[in-house]
Image 1 (cartoon, rainbow, N blue to C red):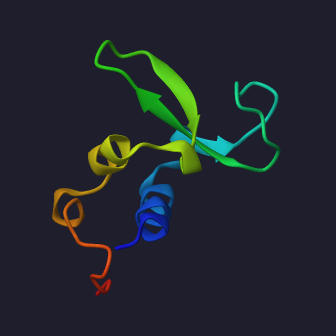
Image 2 (cartoon, rainbow, N blue to C red; image 1 turned 90 degrees about the vertical axis):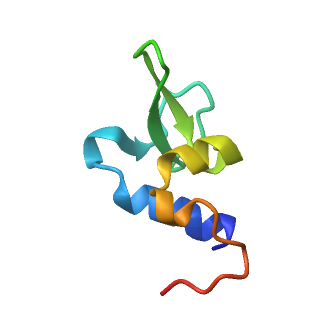
Length: 76
C-alpha cells in the first residue's frame, strides 16, 4: 500500500467523532484539510493534520494485517 492508500484507509475507518476538517481551532489551520484526534498514553487528545501523520502514527492507526505491506502491494 502506498502512503496515500494508508491515509485513506485510516480516514475512512475513523469514526466521525474523531475526524473532521481543519478550522480556526487547529494549530496548523489550513481550511479544508482533514484532521484526526490523536491520543497520548496519558489520555489527552490533540488534533493533527492527516497528511502530517508520521510513519509510526500511521502504523499505530492501521489494522495489524495492513501495517507491514510493502508500497508495491496491491490492495485486495
